[in-house]
Length: 183
Length: 242
Image (cartoon, rainbow over the protein chains, first blue to last red):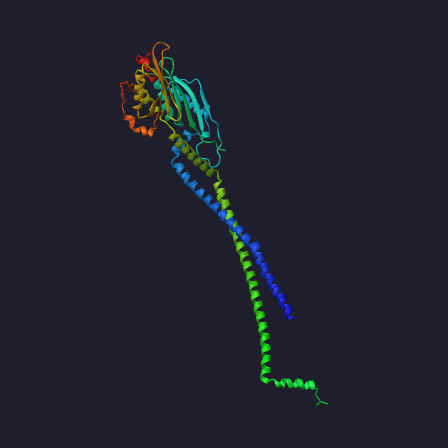
């Protein structure tokens, strides 16, 4: 009787120990590790989000302080091609200098902003080309105006040729800049 | 009858009597001790086994509690993350983010554009001054990389050489070279056509040259200030061949 009881208890103890070990090893510990990994991931993500939130707060303060410069910068590099304003701007300059431009060609497609993109690419420019005839002073003034215009323009190439009388014909290829359109 | 004992019984009775009484007692004691020791060792093993089982159960419970605690922490962290993300997703924050990205994008674009920029507004009058009076420039082209090509006519190879030297004296220009030259006698005028290639020096290198005066080392005459006629019609105004 005693011996059979002892055998039973031994078996029971081994069974309990085995089940406990197996349950811990196969169920609880993997779940524990998985939860720990998830906590770590979420902590990292939360910290990144908090850091971004904090940098946004700082950015807001900085942008508010530099609001004048920011506004000018956004005019210098507008969102998209902004062809109407570009044409108006060019016409204003040409009218001031009493120059006439028979044709103006503006090319460049409006790209849509993609996440994390903040670099200059050829897709972020507008190509403008036109020819104009006038005196050297007029043409040089036009070049100066273009270089100092509030909308930033980079003259890529210039060519002069003698026109009728004492006037010159100037062909300009200009690059204006734009920001990608918001989604 | 009672006194008759079977021989075997006698022998049996006689045998114990042959062993000393003390030894009999010791053997019984030894047997008893052995039994107790076996039982005691068995109980000890059982105890250890049960202790191990209890430890295993306790460890399982401990891990389970830890896991539960972790799960609670995870839920709290998820709520915290959700709050921060919803704060980030607010329209005002989105607007600031867009504005900041636009600002960064614009600054990057402009800084890159400035690096590749030539200041034609200050270069053109300088070029204008460097065209000699006996030279008529027919065309000037300035490419994206600052390469300048001047095509013109003059009266002699010497005048072409003078023109090259005049251009070389400019701090705005470098690599002045004669790309081509030829004599044209189509109209019986003996015009010398030429193309000079040169390159614009970047503005930071020419900042000190603004005070430089118009010098013509080989006798070619500069055109003076920017208000003088165009270099392309120099010969018209200075008694050129056309």
